[in-house]
Structures are given as structure tokens and as C-alpha cells.
Length: 48
Image 1: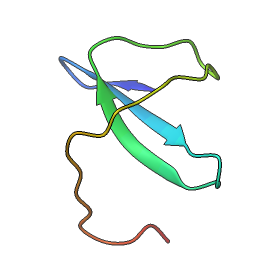
Image 2: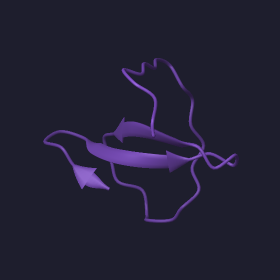
Image 3: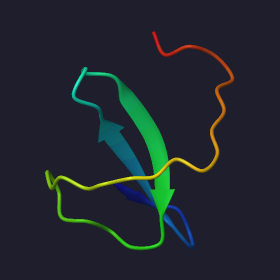
């Protein structure tokens, strides 16, 4: 988890093993499970 000025950059791991990059205003505990709602998303290139 990285603090980026006004928000935290989080790496979310889905049950399928895929990862998503997300941002949040507060930092959850490392390794914790969280519920998320996706409101907007984009991808410039596939993760390799």
C-alpha cells in the first residue's frame, strides 16, 4: 500500500487470483478482506 498525496493506492486480489489497482481515502489493515463496489474502471494495457 502506498500513500499518493490525498489517497492510498491499494492492490486488490480477487478470489480468481486476478489483481486490481484501486485508490481509497483511508488505509485498511494489510491482509484484511474488504467489500468493494466498482463505480468506474479503465485499463490502458493488460497486466503481464
